[in-house]
Picture 1 (cartoon, rainbow, N blue to C red):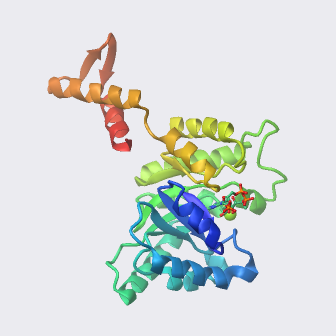
Picture 2 (cartoon, protein in one colour):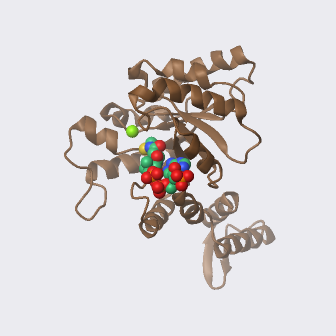
Length: 282
Ligand code: COA
Ligand code: MG
């Protein structure tokens, strides 16, 4: 999911051609206060102009404590909008509030109820960290959860959120892991946070591989150059696909077996489930 500042025509053109699964047009922190109104109108116009694209159109609205959220929603809820990303949410109650408003706005513009999905940045406040269990079961419209360390660190009053070697300090490792568990328990997509150094494809790739290993299914990009690296890292390799297919075929050939051997290794039901996930991901 590629972030595109909502006040930039040029970046929207670049983003559309980036290969990202979703663009997130930002009305929040990538837009200066003086540009907020212009960005809102600009993004609304982009949704109107949206042709058939093979990417989803998301908008990151401003958080509830700014007083801007409902005006943002009113401007962008119209045919062509696929979802909203909610920053600085404190828990599922905030999502329910937004979901109710989306329902009203969809009705007003004649959209099918429930069309506009919700993704959240689930760890940007201390209260949010304590409320992660509120996402289970998932509130209406929630499809994905991601996490962020910058706003959380600022709120806590931390002087930094990284170790000297560049890894996340412990509080943010907790945020990352808890986001993963909450999204999994809520049965929505866990999406890893951004990698800020957009001129470091090797570092991004290594970090994506760790995220994929841990169970994240995708990642936020902040620069078009990151999209190809991310898509590659989170896609199963041809070898993984072939192996998954072999596991599925072997179980299909032995419908009453709970465990089988392939090439001298034991496979049981968790391997079958993993193989199905691999093929679904592909
Ligand atoms: N989406 C679309 N296009 C982007 C882009 C993005 N996120 N980031 C950069 N580009 C474009 C630039 O406009 C430039 O296009 P041009 O050649 O037509 O001028 C090209 O890609 C190369 O950009 P580059 O010079 O490498 O970077 P930059 O200095 O222009 O921009 C950032 C750096 C960080 C300002 C920019 O990547 C950005 O705005 N990122 C998104 C920030 C954001 O939305 N943050 C909110 C979530 S944390
Ligand atoms: Mg932020």
